[in-house]
Length: 103
Image 1: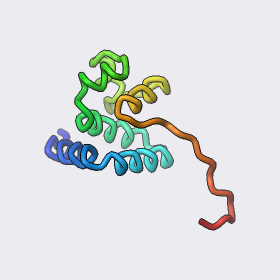
Image 2: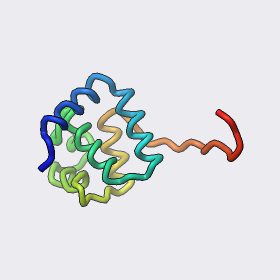
Image 3: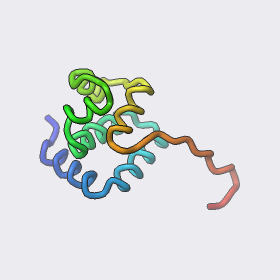
Image 4: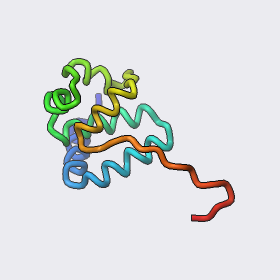
C-alpha cells in the first residue's frame, strides 16, 4: 500500500513551490519514466485542488482522471496537456544539447 503521508507531504511541497514541481516534471519527462510521471502527477493533483477541481478544469470526469493517473494509466497527449494546464503548467519541447557541446 502506498504511503499516504508521503503523498500528502509531497503535495504540500508542490503547493508551496510550483517552480520545483515544474522542474521535477521536466526531469521525469526527460528520463522517460512513465510510472514516476504518473505518481508525481497524482501527488500534484492533490496539491493543486484535488481530483474534482483538476478534472473540472481539464474538462475530464473525475473517474477518467483517476484512471488516467493510475499506475496502469497511459494518458493521451491531449489529456496530459489538459491536466498540466489545469495545474498552471504546459508541455514544452527544447532542443537537446549537441554532442560535444559544453553547458
